[in-house]
Length: 265
Image (cartoon, one colour):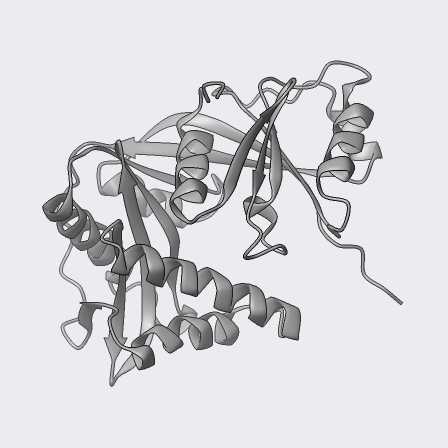
C-alpha cells in the first residue's frame, strides 16, 4: 500500500480501517470504501497523491464514478501538507468545492479551565447512552431527512464498536441525564485522532469541549501507547482557537474536494 504523507489523511485511513472499511490501491490513487455507511462522504472517497495537473480533474471524476457507480456524491482527497490546489478551476467547473482544513497535533495537552461543575463526564456504555448522540446530532443539525438520520445512526454505531473494542473512547458530557457535548478519540500505531467534537449551542462557553478533549486523551493513553494526538479543524471556526489553547499546534493543511448529492426538484 502506498504511503500517505499527510497526518490528516493518514489518520482518516487509519480510522476507516479500524472501522472495517476497505482500503485499496489503484494505479495513481487509493480507494477508501465503507460499505456499512455508503452515504458517508469521507468514508467513501478517492485519495490522490498530489494536486491535479491541467486535464486531470475529468479523469479523477471518471475514476470516482467507476469506483462508486451508485454514489450520489463525489468525494476526493489530495494527499499533501501545504494546501496546494493545483487545477482548482477545472474541479470547480465539474461542480466540486474545496474544503480546506488545518491539521493540528500535540504530544502533551494543557490543563483546561474548570468546566461547569453541573456536568457529568463519562464514557458511553449503555444502550440508552448510545442512543443520545443520535438525538444530539438531530437537535443541532439542519438536515432532518431520514437519510441523514440513518447516516448518523451508522456513525454512532461505528463509534460504539470502536469503544467496545478498546480502540479508544466516545466521551460525553451530560446534564440532567441529557448529552450536551461529546467527542470520539481513537488510536492505533501511536496516533490518536479526535472525531466529532461537538457542543450543543446552548451549552457553549462553559469549558465542556476543553475538558472532554483532555479527559479523552488521558483515558486513551491509559489504554494504549499514544505518541501524537491529531485533530482536524476548519481554520475559520472558533473551535480551532480552543485546540490551540490546549497545546495543539498547526502542522499541515488538508484539501478535500466534495460534490454533495444534487437536490431534486
